[in-house]
Length: 116
View: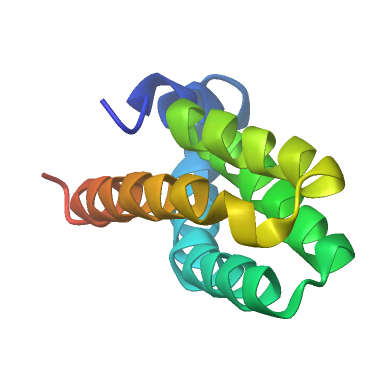
């Protein structure tokens, strides 16, 4: 599964009635920001901007972990580390795998918001 819903649901344990609004806000932010981070990974892979690549991978990793997208967080962490030592053009396969997983996560989050 691309998304561990128990992570999102755990916010209810300590936030109470404010949790639903908080969860919706972070999901909507993620739905907006994550595709932009993926685009930045692709752009910087082409331009060779390793520092920006690593920052984008780090942000994608952290944001994904916050929402329970652990497999995506692992893939982003691998990109973050690889971006520090590997020529970015060599990471195309990993970026592609990350994009596929991100697509699954985005779909799962949209379904969560829709109550499915």
